[in-house]
Image (cartoon, rainbow, N blue to C red; front, side, top):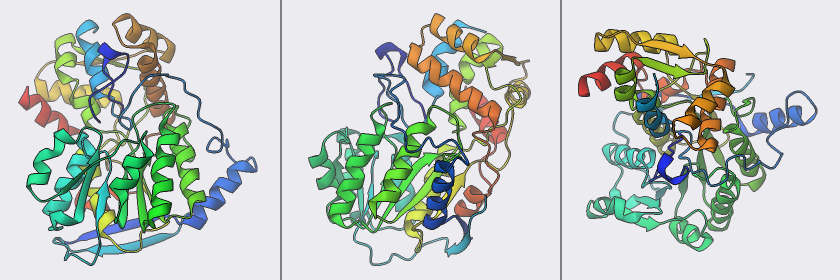
Length: 381
């Protein structure tokens, strides 16, 4: 999820039993890529990603901080597999699980979920750049290791002795592919049994600029020989709930998504899904399209905010170019404004619309709804 700090040109502080449904296979993914190369789709994955926003750091595609900063200033044909995960997973003989990006919010929640699932803390490696942020995990028995995607030596040390790795996508636009390559190559050397990669929803057919480096990373994984599973995450509900104070102050939600629907879910939902996949067997080659159960439009979001707050909130839809220009005028870096406008355009096209049901099946409950998230966020203001 995009998480940009407008004060530093985009640089940020770091980003019952269960029925689970597996979609896709490694062979199916390779076939789909080949079809695109033959002209069936736009073959974006094999093109080197352009650095459209130099110096712009993101955490996957978390947009809430960037949007919140602006508001005070303006009004398939794939195989299907099933697996069952008991509500308290008996621990198996796994050497260790490495969670990259554990100093960010998603990675931290994955670690917490694994601990809740009774995974012995000594079998978890929480890895990230600013390890002081997760020093408390070490006190609970979790291994804490420094991992910097730009430092191959640190990556190799972090993955030492691991069996599975959750590769949370990097945070620097234009550099993500090389950073991910560093992790994948280290996984090859260490004989990692599985990489779970947090990609973006509908990555293989998405026209969003944020999807380009995800597409290229998926290709790297295909070519690596390391078993992998794709967690194609849609938007976070927090992208919207985090900006509610500004929306309520201005009386308007502003964007460029038109009548497009987005399948947003909570960060906790995505973290629980990632943990479920790491704890399951036979995940290599699967593709999970993850998103909320109830897609919504921005107008519907505005109506829900109105109902929860007891105050009328309108949705103001602008053309993408005008929306980006307005964001720049109120202080958002040009690169960040471009990403926000392009992401809304992607929502309008349906790039973040997911109807697989994979997320709710993996977590064993309905995904958090937009209405739930809005009511909770408004009550907390």
